[in-house]
Length: 525
Ligand code: XMP
Image 1 (cartoon, rainbow, N blue to C red):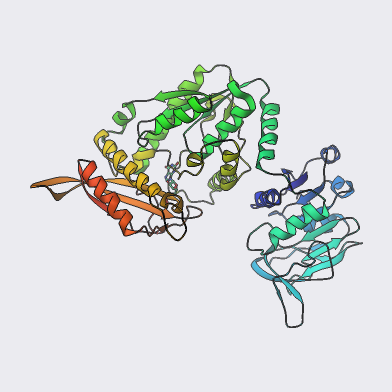
Image 2 (cartoon, rainbow, N blue to C red):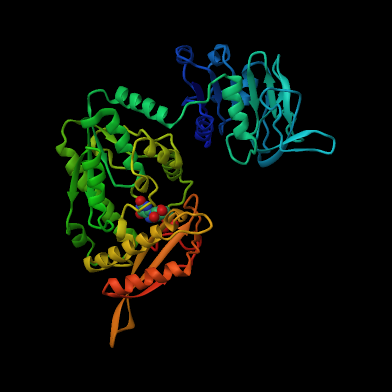
């Protein structure tokens, strides 16, 4: 096992991710754990010290526990981790008010096990060079005793150092980010070759370990989880159920703005197939009554969010033996809500599922997916036996069709939209792209229909119609922060529009949204 000590960098989780990708088990712990903690780590093979915003030579900044350097295991310091290592082992770190950020070309110096054979290009003088992502203000200006120079740039003469005898390595740049081209290889080299981890750890092992952790955490207490049918809460439910079986109760709030047959599918998968206890709360038309006359998107979001929380809380309050509230929080949610708290991220829309449920329930929080990225959550879902169609589902917003019906939400509109949307999704799944061999549902990141409460004239048979419009939206994106509209084949659009207009009486016009984000958002509201 590899221990990652976190000094507060935004990208510490990426270190963990790269280590897991190298097939090695790792854990992240706060950078100020005591010496005893390090001493009592069983099976410890190596330690990685993360970056930080702080300055290593300031008095108040976190110190690396001295035991780290006495544990007789290799240590890799990254950025702040390097400066701390230098500072604490007798080198020199100097403060600078000039921060250097971004792409840099680093020259590998000497022969070190960490960088040997890794290079992106060679200069005309024959120097092996690495393309890296650098971020530093302070820098190491004198090597600690026993260390040799491992890498340098013009503005940062000591960009890497090593004491190979003791297995200490440090780099000023960030090997964990993808901009550092050989970063993945460096981290794999460190954990496998230098620390001697075998590299055969995988998702099924993760399941075993996560199950043990949940059991140890929860004991014989009971857990409640709000199941939405989305990927994260579904994987969390399956994982926790595997760990503690009937000690888990899921609450599925059906606010009446879900997609066609969605509630039935969720119940069939979780209650029938997995045998998980799921309470299906159907709020019926009560939410629609509260939404009557409300056209403003943010006001609608608040009403739907509040309804969801109230129903959930009422249900949870009945489960008097529950001590834990489980949530499918994943790592990007942690960053996003941290950003929201520090005011760094501007709230464009209030996403009620980030930030979670209120703390009035007085429950302890169980978040078994907190350290995973989305694609890892999906792999975990597959390892747990969830159906691929559920694991590779497009995201669906918490307020559901409430933000896909423009303006006031009415039952009639929701019913029409549900049917049009189901046709669109069905055809996307059926249509295969010849070049990639994949279906168009898998080729898009999010696709749905939007209901426009305007009427336009049409003609059907001999008669004139005066009916509603739906817009189809399909986007491709990797992070949902920016997105391109998907170039769906005309034949597919034609099929969908033909079916929607023929099968959904009340809709006589279908349009396709060709706006990218930004400036448009993915949802229409
Ligand atoms: P936008 O529309 O902001 O959407 O480009 C980005 C992603 O966020 C989803 N989204 C929401 N999710 N509650 C949610 O849980 C919301 O209120 C909400 N609004 C947008 C959207 O579906 C897309 O995946």
